[in-house]
Image (tube, rainbow, N blue to C red; front, side, top):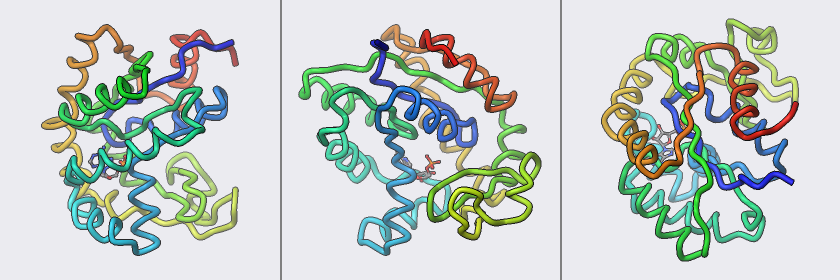
Length: 220
Ligand code: AMP
């Protein structure tokens, strides 16, 4: 039985957090919690939260901590998180990380590991501007590597693929700046707690998965 199950996946936008979180969530049978996906689903459904979040997301800024923290708190209290979870895209600031520590303490638990997926800015810019996503089932494709992306129809659910508005080059550059200013300090934060493990994010998704499986002691 796998014992490490409360995980955070860190990394710049486009490092591959979402892709790896989906794979791990299936493998470990624990929920994948993506704050970005939660915001996008609210934007799609035109909820008040979606309207608020959109202003920040479209410019590459972070949604305010007060808003984001509440969403994660509610999600972590749901029963399916009892056996673990994979947080993808949260925390993104030191303040969020400290709040997460407190939330988990209140729930009588703590993080087991923080996996940092490392990739340089140049690779990320190429990757994100060529990314195409399914607005229905959130599947992710890339123009360079995927015939499906070039065809523009999701192979999982048949919906028309889109480019996320925040994947335009200008917004990607803003997102990277936001990452370096506000999220990168989390690497030292978690290193100081002895929780951080680094894996490479510049190769293929399969290479990164293999490294993650190795650090988690999982077999293919
Ligand atoms: P992602 O899909 O994780 O790249 O998130 C897309 C966007 O949602 C980010 O660029 C932020 O604007 C917003 N967002 C996602 N997670 C957070 C978070 N933990 N704190 C603040 N903003 C967030």
